[in-house]
Amino acid sequence: METIVNFFVNGVLASIVGSIILIVLGGLVSQYIRWLLTGVLGRLLDIDIEYVFRSKAEADEDITRELEKASFVYLLTGRGNDIQRGLFSKVLHRKPRGKLSEFKLMLPLPNAVGTDWIMQREKELATFDPAFGRGVLQNQIEMTIKYLENYISNGEIELRLFNYPHIGRIIITDRVVYFTPYSTHTHGKDSRIIKHRRGGEFYDCFLRLFLQLWDVSQPV
Image (cartoon, rainbow, N blue to C red; front, top):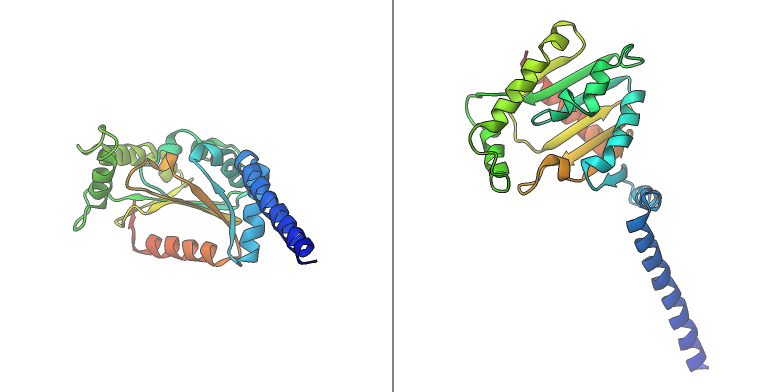
């Protein structure tokens, strides 16, 4: 009798382990399954994580869909490459702008007094990308600011400059937040992007951070 029970228990455990392995393997292969698992686990743990994208390239399509639905967009970023081409250039060039009524953007403040967070980030970039280390990052930020001058004067975008550690890129809409944590050993485009849905603590925290930084940042 004991042997039968042990055999049954071992069989059940083997089935459970096998199911977990299949789910994990499926999650590695199928984006839909990964999305489903992330959403289910997020709700079980009572956190507002909707999905985790492995890179910018993987997230672009989803971000584009959210930007098309947004009534406002708040963006805190580093160089702002996507503003001149890519995701946000589509928002700026879209005519009419649909339901989008507000676009607030924060970029790092060049030549800041006190701690130079641009140089601090450039030193990190220089450890794995030899193009950096000679003021390239600041030049790129200044070029983005220059590029935006007409959009600012036309009232299509509000720009302020922050002097704060480059912790990552934050995209906020009335529905979601996308957070890209910057790493010391890779570019932002190669970093993971975490999507948070509105109504949770992470969404509220990032929105609060953005608005507080906005209040103390330098208008352009």
